Image 1 (tube, rainbow, N blue to C red):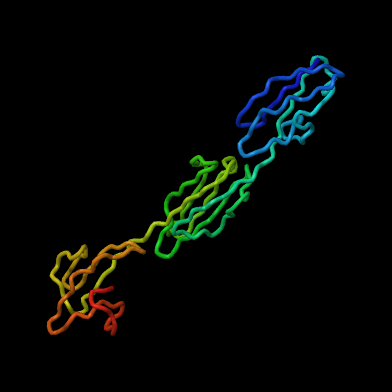
Image 2 (spheres, rainbow, N blue to C red):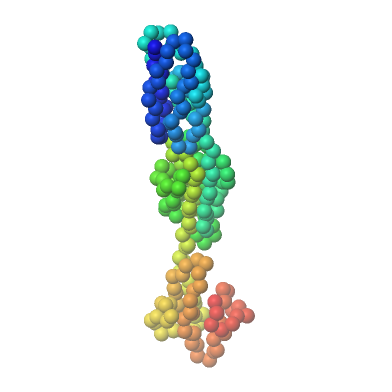
Length: 239
């Protein structure tokens, strides 16, 4: 007699008992019980990186001539294909395949991003693989927050990928110039007033809220706010 030992060869679950054989007697190999996330079983080889020699449950005879010998069989795996979804919120995806079956198990996945007008790229993102949060990636943001790159490690690509990246709205300071008029220094509707300016930190793409009280100028009527000095048309109290 002789013995066949089954090696999962990087399997992620499952186990198999040794199987006994008798010389000159044809017998089916035990059904494969190993599994590897992101891969499908291709068959058995005589070495970990060998070519498939025997199919699952294949009938075999005299795998060795050694009396009481041992034959080692190794599971061979075929890489699966995985879906990729990128949820880019106020971010522009520059590169990176998305859709069904675009990421191969065991192959690193890469993507790049650029900022959308009015937004910076975030310092962090979220990645899930096969429905589970993953940290097996490198996300790098340029110092000016205008571009970023992502690489998911090859060994982590074993299921459907979902990437979520959300831009951070810029918060500029808006300044209103009284243009010859004046205010009493203080605060008006969240605006900081000096005698000649009103300023407020605002969020891009969001309403400024209520404008400050109108400035006054002796002998003049306040007409409105303009982006350029001496503009001719605007409604009072608008910006």
